[in-house]
Length: 304
Ligand code: SF4
Image (cartoon, rainbow, N blue to C red):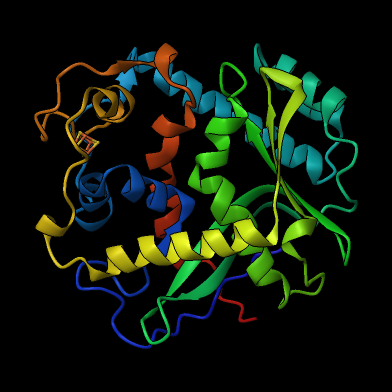
């Protein structure tokens, strides 16, 4: 298992609106890509969430708790705790999910695994002379065969298998492989080339049908440009006007505003969207990752 953080050395104040030690992640970058105003309210103003993200509320909380519990159970299993001991403490539907994990855990993950629920972070310079920011990812499971291949596993507890084309366009599918390749040259098991990386999503709802996304040098170069553009826009922002609302279209309301805690503040509706209509429940859970990002400041710093 590893925990690696980029050194906290910034050439200039990173931005006028974010703290100098702000850490970029797939989560907050996806928030910005979806709606700059939501990024502003969440990460700059850090406003408490005035509305539930989806309904029914109790069910949303239940789904979030289940997802956390499943990740904890798998984490314990991956660290070597006997499966029987873990399974004995699980109730429906976690017991069935865990049984699926035991049966369908991908057999080609390199062993021993390199990281379990581990955080990896790199310094990322904006342009040639811009500020150096920190970009981080938290891998559910990482298996590396040095000089040969690397598999990033993400456990998904969504109600149904998410479509590959949807996952491919998510920033998680871009940030995780990018960051792994960039960091690998400085880590004991590196370097890893883009073509040696695979991002794999594993579903409790379809444990024998994971989504496998291959990676290559062209995607790596495109991801670099994408991340440059997004981070440059964010650090250039000086006030609320630089973080506009997502355009008020029917599609954006259905996909974003209906599940956004700030919709009443933005005058984008009153009622929460239904959990059943979400393509990926992680969309609703995303803001819960803010706590992780804030707590990164407490993680011991290891230079590489
Ligand atoms: S309600 Fe819509 S416009 Fe307002 S912050 Fe949320 S996603 Fe953006």
